[in-house]
Image 1 (spheres, rainbow over the protein chains, first blue to last red):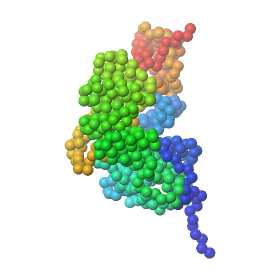
Image 2 (cartoon, helix red, strand yellow; image 1 turned 180 degrees about the vertical axis):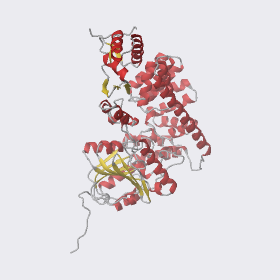
Image 3 (cartoon, rainbow over the protein chains, first blue to last red; image 1 turned 180 degrees about the horizontal axis):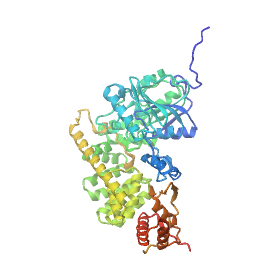
Image 4 (cartoon, helix red, strand yellow; image 1 turned 90 degrees about the vertical axis):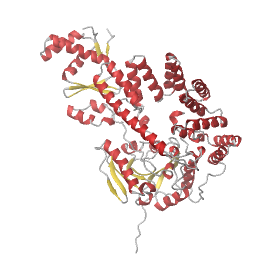
Length: 508
Length: 92
């Protein structure tokens, strides 16, 4: 009698049988919320993504420090400087798309993780080295919590928080004998090299290195048993160009019903198809048609009304101000009731020193916006420019009341407090900026000034050191940016509307 | 010395760790470590003792002259005031 081995799993294999539980999320940290809600624990994770999405979090309760039994133990605990949540920020507020695998592992949701990297990441020695360096940077920050790396032809393995992590291509995944958490980021199909800028900000229009139909075939060949799949669109941040957002929907539909045919084009009657038509109409200068397509698109899926739908932000980041301004003007023509292009237009006019026109745009944006908007912050800057300090303070105070994470307004309040010789306030506002992740030289300058005025010499020395270090980094980055702009080539195929959308939620 | 009857802010958490006192200020996101002398002074701050009384206790405990004790207490209390982690106890 022949005894044959079979996969010992009760879970359907992706691409062979319908997966019962599939979740689509806008931003990838939404997957963490899905896992928490499902109550999953001790699972194998297959993370198919152009990014690691793991970074250390300051999540340890500082009450552990108060419970230390000796100075030596306290010293050891404090050696992990980045670990302590001294500000008492709620832990979920610390989680974002770039670090959500940390709590997933730390909380025991994941016991073993596989980061499936795009094939191009492993295609050359240079790319492999870039992946290795990225992992090494993570290990270096907390060597006591991250093990040594082993690099082989098949991939990289290491230990993180006591859990094994393997980095490999889809082809090199092992055979699993239990159901895995299948976690897919659409940007996996669109990311060509590790550590590069998000696709929206890339130099040239981004096309997929792998189209959905081929990806699904590869996934099927991997025979992954899974009972829970998460798929992230990742348009926010510019990782997935909006024109390819529909890949997420295609993948979800295919995993739910592998028997149905899949095409790489946007399905008819969808927001994706309307958006493709919108782009073509704008390129041709057919603005009335563009407006119709835009309205159809937004009616079908309001999430497509995003800054990433326009190339203006990309032009802005590339310092092509006039081009960006033209695009924002076009967007206002297409959708005059959308507040975003008014904010963006105002920001550009400010840069071009057209103060009155800029303020007019900010006023319009504030009027049109259904919720908090950076226009409030900019109105504060307009007031400051006129010397109306009290009015400026009111606008920024209103801005942070509406959005406590508005770091620009906290920074402006810190700057104003410094101007007005109020070191205690500057310290509070500056600390808030640092909590929110602002780490530039300016904020450390304000903190250093405040510390000096308050006689806090140790804090002063620390902040002064940080100011110097961040200043050097900023100057280096500015130098490199200028060099890149000078050496970039513009191809004949480049057209403004073909450039990647660059949406930065913080500028909405 | 012109400092009032001070006490740690009620929002703080602190504990003794070995010969140190560790103070956690979540408002500022800071952890303060007080050495043996500073920790001793800290534990005297109950909102009822004046700075002079604290200096007297310090002088007796550490066998230092009164002038040195007064100077050290005043300097330390001013630091705590600047750090905004002490307050004058308004309760009778």
